[in-house]
Length: 158
Ligand SMILES: [Zn+2]
Image (cartoon, rainbow, N blue to C red; front, side):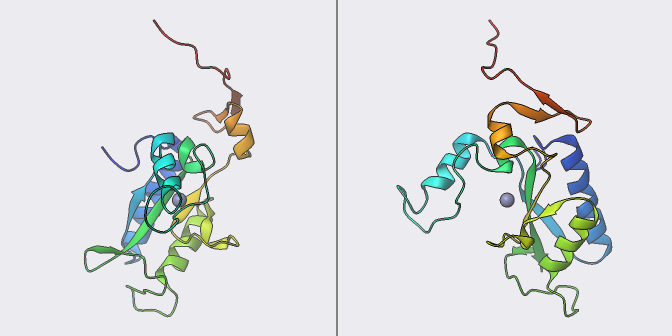
C-alpha cells in the first residue's frame, strides 16, 4: 500500500511530480495522507470532541477533499524524519521549506492549503470545479478530469 493509493489519477500524478521536483531541489518530502475514508474522517472529527486530545480537523466525514481522493498532505523530511516545523529550511535558504513546496505545488496546478485563512501548510488538493456539496450529491471527476453524476444510491451487486 502506498499513501498515494486511492487518489484520483491526475492528483496522484501531480503528487508524484511534486515529490520528484522537491527531491531534485534538495527539499525531501513524503506524503503522509491521501485518501481518507469516512470512518477515518469520523475518528479525526471525534478527537477533541467525543475523544480525548486537541481538535485536529473542522471537517466532518464527507466534508474534506481527502474523503474523495482529491487531496493529499505532505511532510518535509529533515534528518530522515518528518517535521511539521513551519520554519524549517532543510536546504538552508531563507524561505521556509513548507512555503517552497507549496509554491512548487501551485506551479503544478494544485491548490495549496497554505493560502487559506486557516493555513494548512502540508495540504494540497484539486477540486475539478466541484464543491463539497457537489461531491456529496454524487458528482465526480472522471479519470480525464471531466465531471459526471453518479447515482445517488450506489447500486448493490449481488
Ligand atoms: Zn489535508
